[in-house]
Amino acid sequence: MFKCTRCGEEYSEEEMMYKCKKCDSLLKVEREVKKPKLEGMGIRKYKEALSADSEIITLGEGSTPLCYAEKLSLEYNSEVHLKYEGLNPTGAFKDRGSALAVTKALEYGYREVTLASTGNMAASVAAYCAKARLKPKIFIPHDTPVGKIAQVIAYGGELVKVKGSFQDCMQEAWIEAGGGSYLAETGLNPYYLDGEKTVAYELAYQMDEMPDMLIAPMGTGGLLSSIYWGFLECKELGLIDKIPTLIGTQAKYCSPIIDAFNEKHKRPREPSSGFRTVASSIQVKTPFNGHTAIEAMVETDGFGVKASDKRIIEAIFEMGKEGVFGEPASALPLAALKKLIDPTVDRNIDEGQSIVLLVTGNGLKESELMVEKGIMQLEE
Ligand SMILES: [Zn+2]
Image (cartoon, rainbow, N blue to C red; front, side, top):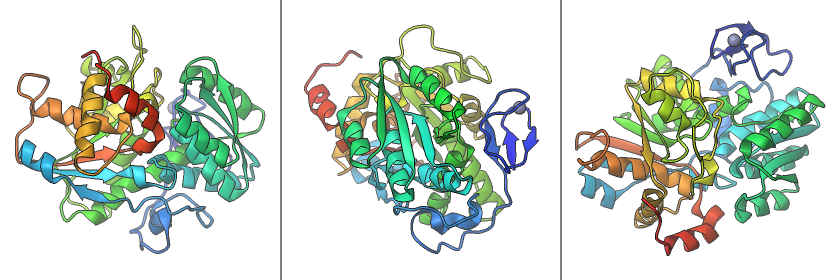
């Protein structure tokens, strides 16, 4: 069934739904989960814990490496791991959610799929739609990085460039969905978020002990929310003993979720000024899953950390020294960790902790920008 993430109202899954009819909030899939048998490829490994009723469409997503970062661990006197989600089939963590969301589109009998995206989700959904022989119509901001656009074209997706922000694209996608298309939106599709939770399951199997903390970037807030839900399930199934402290990171000038968290609000408000960042994947002014991301941080004794564009770029180079190339948004967790270790800024953390940084997207997607920004002086 679908359950409202705000008022708790429950709905049958008979018809596809995106929002609660009572309070207009987002829905979460609630099903009985069983211990995964780890059979098959991609997220099929976790099918006993997922909401698919048919064979999951897969391109081999997930099973990404958990790289021990030797130099960072030594420098920060901690145990740092990089979960390299940039090695998913389309180069971003989104593939875990897209695999399930597109599978459900077929189950519900849709032929057309639509969404708004800052780029990564566009590429991901286009790939899975190609595999499922569905037609995606994707609305993207006009300044989306060329690497991500190239992917959508290669997968045969229909691209509509919108002169405006992600929010403007979202409005277009809503109109399209009203016309009978399936909405495969990161922040709105409950099945997408159900697929994303496999990050938590995978860590449960990859690590002997859960880390003390996990740091992830936040755009819509969906990733942190679904990882939290995944950890709750893993604990219920006896796969893990404890849930890591969840730390969400956003860019300094685009931080509606962290601002709301710091001001003790339950839901994000729109940032009062500007929302531009070099981390285009998480340039989201109105985060749909902000309230559930805040809940994930509160419930795990976590918090939010902002980082400037300058720190984000520096972190890309630092991750590079570990042999991992991430796009700007995926360097935010390391930029946040550097701030946490620095005694002169923000909240400090103790040394000697076990930390997982989620490297959400492959650096090749924004290689042009990387070269340009890498040689420019950025404002702190
Ligand atoms: Zn509701």
